[in-house]
Image 1 (cartoon, rainbow, N blue to C red):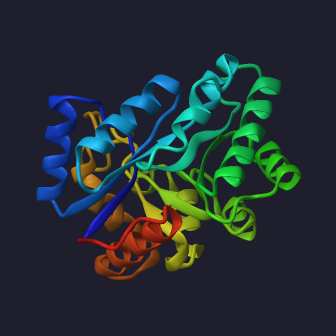
Image 2 (cartoon, rainbow, N blue to C red):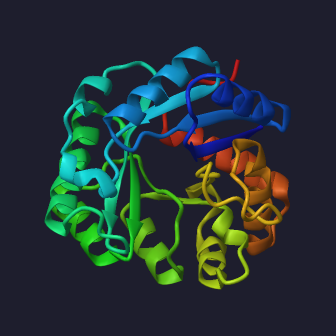
Length: 250
């Protein structure tokens, strides 16, 4: 049993087909992630319609300029297991950095107030990400999704008590630092994700990603850690169940 700890599924027939394909590939649990109020509502819709699918609600740093309207109301929905994805993205700077920091800090507070997990997106903003967490307090269940740092950043993230989630990047030719981070991450502190429809893993680069390919990500993590792929399958799913407080499998 694999868990895709982070994907972006649309409503309707396309999302239903992606879920069915994932289940056929042994990916039986999916966390559908919101990036603004509208996509968070869709994530809840999809989760409500499908067994084995849960939702998050949050505002991505790209959309921080729009504020948090509509997010708090979604956090009481039973399908919602986390706040996010939220954080800082200084690579694109689609929202001003002060707005990114403010909205990130507010979502850290929402996760704490609602007893939910926190899903962090950080890119080219490690120091400020850790500064916000130090100021606000890292929620007890926190994940750095699509981890793109090296071993030094991994150690800093792990020191906060967080989990690291690895995407298809871990198998990319130029991602030796990410593989080194996976190698030093304890097996009980990692998850795997597709971040679909983005970042399709090798050998599917250039295509739209899909949750059914999360075993390929797990295989790349297993290679980096020099363990059997079954170890990653079991450990990552157990970590996802713990982090998102998912019920036991039926």
